[in-house]
Figure 1 (cartoon, one colour):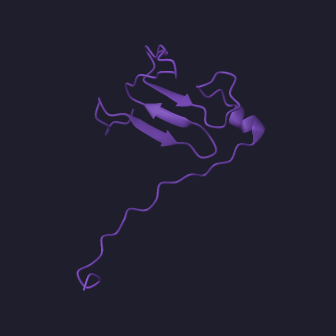
Figure 2 (figure 1 turned 180 degrees about the horizontal axis):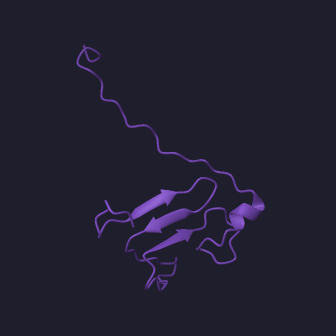
Length: 86
């Protein structure tokens, strides 16, 4: 967890061509309500390529299959100026 991140905040980072990196205390639950034991794991990575043998966690398979996804957040919306509204 970064020094500037509050202790109770969760940060999820989209890694280029890789997994979702989750930092902070979270509960990870499957579709049936089962819960993974994340004791002692302040951070972990979730697979998004679909090739991990350890789903839902990343095992690095994205490197072997050449997974590519360069998702980026959209730029912040710029509110219209007063002259644009008239």
